[in-house]
Image (tube, rainbow, N blue to C red; front, side):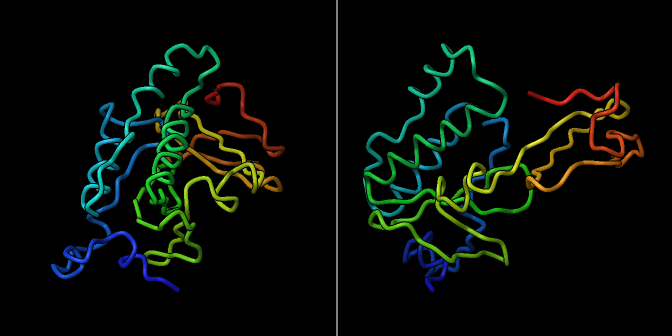
Length: 192
């Protein structure tokens, strides 16, 4: 099995003792805090490996999203990642996502010559190519459920396997959110 550090760090970075965490880009599921940061990160990592980041840009994705009336919250980041994964593949790189158990995308770039790495972990968490069958929520049948607590406004997000419900779920503040059958209570509004 290839060590993750051997894939995502340049030889110079490894020699200097740079940790993998220093080359991870974290983006909330709702998108970038400043447009363009994701593309800047990806381009910077490609340059770090000594290549020209031709086509590493998400402007076209932003323009297309602006004209899409069906776009929902959280759709744009996934479209950006799909686009960048395709561009990177053409350059011989792979966009990797570390599954940290949160609703954020933890991203890495690895020169892989177009071969999708498998069996990677970092600090005990799985790392896989963006869009890989095991990563795609469609493959697992998982459903993403998010809401803001009606009492304290805390945002809560769950990724539910098809066999689970949120029956009896409460917010950390103690507010009941779902009934015993897993239906949202009347004052709870789920995000689209």
